[in-house]
Image 1: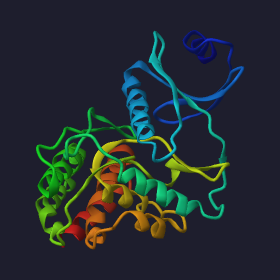
Image 2 (image 1 turned 45 degrees about the vertical axis):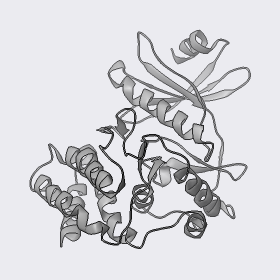
Image 3 (image 1 turned 90 degrees about the horizontal axis):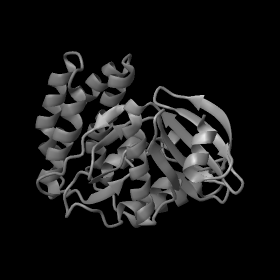
Image 4 (image 1 turned 90 degrees about the vertical axis):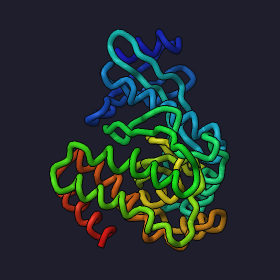
Length: 288
């Protein structure tokens, strides 16, 4: 039982209530004498998914730029793997000024010092939803290093095993990448959340923004912004606040499709259906 395993790991007595399950894990609310936790559990074969999430949250927290759930513990035992996080109570995001606060916080995150000596990547591979995400450090920084990273660590790995004609179309996109940087934009390495759609940010009762379920890497911040626009839009007030503290390159609108393609390819792998058609149409638009 989850309650017994929490007691063995953290001490004290715990009351546990199941919240639901996804294709990746089961979730629980655990209440102890002094705190409540949000707990995820999964099989031993998926233990790395939770460890990667814990590592990503710890990295984001270490910047002290944006709020994330604190990691109470992450461990494996004989039965399964568990991740215990601080329980956070959310408030409606429509509260006045939330979008601006999110914009300021995310701009601060993107300007925080990033590891890697100017290169792109991360200290470990992690997971984009249920898909392995490669994060091998680029050989160099700057424009050429970023173009190589996007092609070799994002687009091409995701296109593997997809049905024709997507792999060929993605290869054409990779070949076209240099032409999308003719505005002179030089990518700056930034620690990004990596999977920041509207389901992965929230508003605390204090009004403070919080982000969770990361797939972190050191990347160009444009990749983060593009994901925020893929399945909706950032909350009202986000863009003026973000641009007040972080400049947005002129060519972002042209490159946005490339970064959104990464997530459409991932959704094609995970869910199939119409995502393959959307991905192919986006490839054709980029190369057209």
